[in-house]
Length: 254
Image 1 (spheres, rainbow, N blue to C red):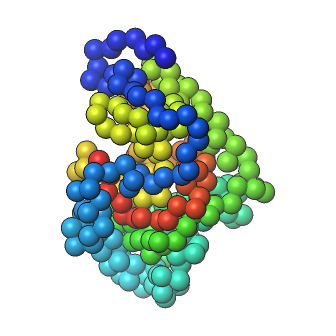
Image 2 (cartoon, one colour):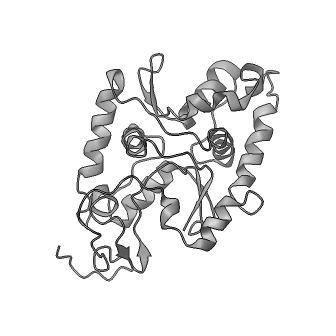
């Protein structure tokens, strides 16, 4: 592939080294980390993402102004784990596929009768991290049939459609060149089983949609807003790609 030289620091394809031919089995981003970063993720006392988990734990039991809390309906958060691995999922009352963050906000507005949290806010990240952490070790198993089929197909199309000034698709890096190198870094498969993640580049926790937006900006494409249906559809397809992988939330990534 020939790529024009650009003055930007993000010279995306100049450093790509093609990995071995053939479709490899699904591999978590954890497999591409340095030993030091793996140790950081595996140690709950050192993993920075656990700060958000603990904050979410407190929010789960905190009574709102209405006198209700998440715990009022969901007494044992761990029992929610088998459901959490199925998000994004089609919800009849919503009439569309929604992700875990949107379900949290639905519970807040429709059951707790309080305001929704802003997407990518500390509070929403904390609750999402806490709930995802309850499912740690379980395998992802999203449904892509029935009413979810159209959303899945839109997400699949998004993953393979080239866009931006660099004319790249998600698949260009995370499928065609997974295992190769970009500026000295190993390119992962872009699996989503670790989200929300503490990303060392950001020095904070971030959602799947923040990662999608970051990638869009990196290839000089206009990003969608976090929580947009475009990103929810892509998240469904990405979670399907991660099927069989265990939830690692909160994962640590470079």
